[in-house]
Image (tube, rainbow, N blue to C red; front, side, top):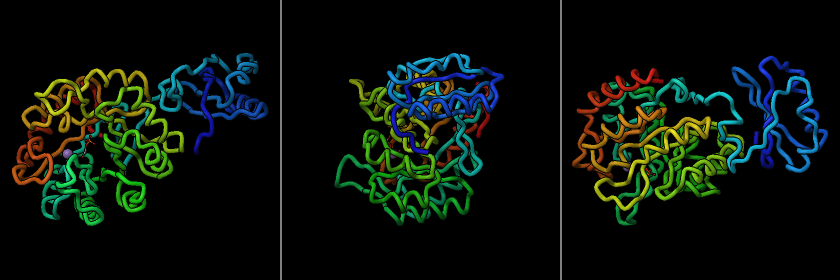
Length: 346
Ligand code: PEP
Ligand code: MN
C-alpha cells in the first residue's frame, strides 16, 4: 500500500506484545489523525507512525500495553531504513531469492543484440549456476550514435531465453512510456544509474507489481541512493534491490571506482538487499573477478555481471564482458566465496 506522509516515529513493540496490543496502538494513531505502517518481524513488531511530528509527540504511546520503546526516525529515509523493518528483506523472484543469507548471481549480456547471442549467453550462465538473467533491451548510451538496444523486440528475445532456461529476467526501464511493455516481460525492473534520480520513473515503478533493481548514480551519495529507493517504497513497492556499480572519481585506471565501503554502510542503514555490479565498475574483464570477490567479502547480497559468447564482437561494453566460455570458472570461484561468508546461492 502506498504511504501518504512521512513516517516520523518508531514504536517498537515488546517481543511478547499481542496482536490486540498492536491493534490498540494503530487505533490510537488513527484516532489522532495519524497513520501506521506495521512491520511484523521475527523478534518484534515495529510500527512506523505517519503524521505531524508535533502531534505524534503529544500521544502517550510509551504508556500503551506492549510498547517497549518510542523513538523518532531522524534519518531522511524512513521506509527503507533499518529501524523500521526489524528483519532484512528477502526478495523472491520466481523462487530465486536475494537478501539475508541468500546470494543472487545475476548474469547475462549487457545488451540484447540478436536472438542467438542472448540465448547462448542465457544457456551458459544458467549452466554455470546463475540465478537470474540480465540483459538490456532499452539501453542508456552515452553516445546517440551507438546501438540503442532492440527495444520491444529485445524483450521478446529475453522472454524466449526465460522460457528456455527458467531464469527470471532483469531488464532496464528508461522511459515511463515503456512501463507497460517492460513490466509485462521483466521479473525485475532495472532502473539504471543515469535514472537513479528520475523521480517520475521511480514513482512509476513504485506502483508496479514487480521488484526493482535500483542502481546507484555515478555521482550519487549513499544517502541519495536511499532517498531514491524511498520514492519506490513509498508508492507501495517494498521489493527494491540496491546496486553499487561504481562512482565517478579522479581515478582513470578503472571505468568507475567501486565504492566497496558503500556495501557495509548500506547494510547498516537499510533492510533492503544490496548487490554489486563489478562489470561496469571495472570496465575491464581482467578486474571483474577481483571486484566480485571483494563484493562478496564486504557483505553484498549478490552480484550482477555481464557475459557474452564473443566479447570482441559485442555492440556494447565489450572490454568488460566475461566470455561465456570462462563464466563457469568465474561462478565456481564466487560460489566458494559465498559459502565462506556463510551464505547460499539463492
Ligand atoms: C547496465 O546495467 O546495463 C547499465 C547500463 O548499467 P549502469 O546503469 O549502472 O550504467
Ligand atoms: Mn553494460
